[in-house]
Length: 141
Image 1 (tube, rainbow, N blue to C red):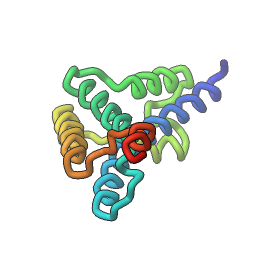
Image 2: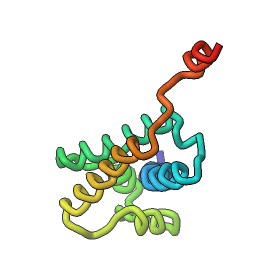
Image 3: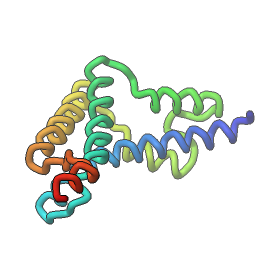
């Protein structure tokens, strides 16, 4: 594989990383807004389980001192592309501005933990619908 292919793969990993982080943050905002607005889809149990698992992975990595595997993969691909970690192009630069900040590790750990706690608390304020459709149909018939 040539350097440009590694650079393309690194950009793809960076975009996936940003999408993962955005799903966590935007998901929490949508759950809270949806709870107020009465949106039924924010109570979907699979959405809520996946959302909770996503932040739990991030929090566990942070508390364990593990570098995110997506960061590690992107770094490796950038090295093979002979690029700096923040990439050479517009897309990589934009993603890195949105995703990476210069702060001590504990700041990130606390931010991830607070976000995780907010998502856990949201389970009480906007509880998921734990019943299945089959069970709900049987109960109403």
